[in-house]
Length: 378
Image (cartoon, rainbow, N blue to C red; front, side):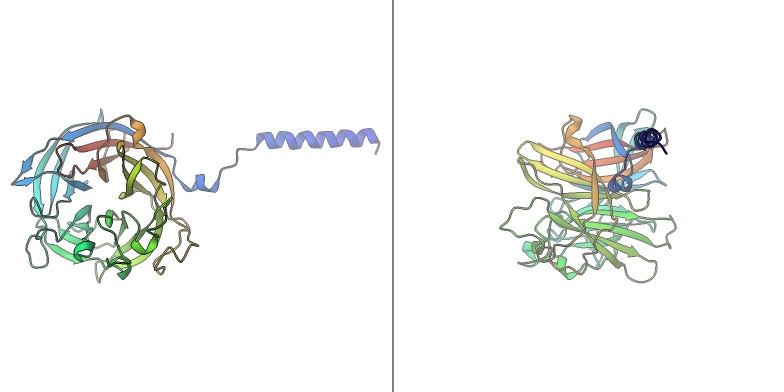
């Protein structure tokens, strides 16, 4: 083989390699394959006037859930039985499915929560924060408790019609408040969502809940925290026998900005796609309230149920999340957004998402509803 032929073959081979490389599709990161291509489009906002309904002030709406069969929403008030007995409201949202607008919101009913003895809760004994509808005509409601008064947080199941408590989820000892460990004041079970694969009341389903901020034993109070670690629990509810806690994982809050005074995880929503969630992180700072919505997946996350303190155990793979929308970029006023739920289908078949704010029963705050369309893919 002559030198000229060898040179020609080498040049041809080099050119083929270059052309082959140019024709390859761009490399896709593993993290990009893990998440859905999902975005949110704001369709409408609505302000609920400050009203009273059946001798209760309508406000403090910190959680919301949707019943598709009746096209009704149930919203929990975080009133600690101070202004009226602890309660949730039944709401009818008049949506224009074509234009994607909220035309009106009507309060249809109020249901008072009742304890094991059938009585309404006395003042300060409950701090209800989130609500999730189950297939067996019940709602699960989380309460943050009160560490200062030694009142433990809980997640309990209530009859949808009567408000009577029916069952309780087991809460691990590490969450129970004392001076050195457990939940912090007003930072406990703020987020709650339910995942079902069936509407049959006898089929099992799953519940996910998380603390709003870190447990005392998981952070050093003398050190600044860049991304606060919180705990998310996964329960399985069976028709026979007690609820079972099957896993717990670490969730890292978005790092604080310089103007942030406090932040926390205020809500979870299980998406229809198995293993995918939306999370709502709410902030408050010198320039008012803010919020971000993330997509979250549990892929390869460490089970932290046997880890007593994150301070002493650092080799943890947290839940993975990806920003979907910074609501501050919408250019609208944001109040204290705490509740989030999937709503009805829109006219184009896409899924709606509803957010609601807790006005803290203050005159300078509002009960704000935001309606979004969930867009998957392009």
